[in-house]
Image (cartoon, rainbow, N blue to C red; front, side):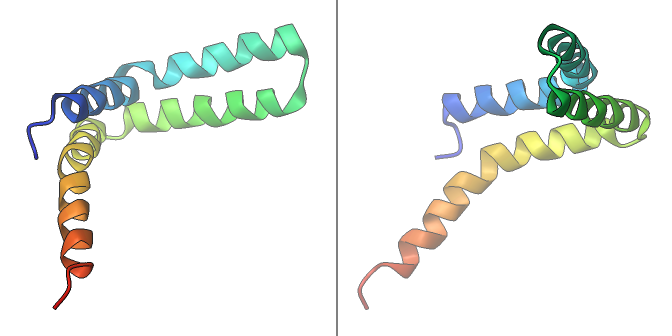
Length: 90
């Protein structure tokens, strides 16, 4: 069922996160690193900082967010239909 409200909500949340909140996640990792002084958290900060910057200046970042949202909406029912047809007896 393509019109599952749960999938639509998850798709919009993920797309909104990628579009608006990816650089903010880097800030959270940065602050958490200074609170805990745990090295791998700084690596997370570095990764999210780079991803937020390069994804933000990429000219197709809106298209990528919409593609991810579309995949979240369309792929689960498609996958379920494909798996269901393989397990039916002949």
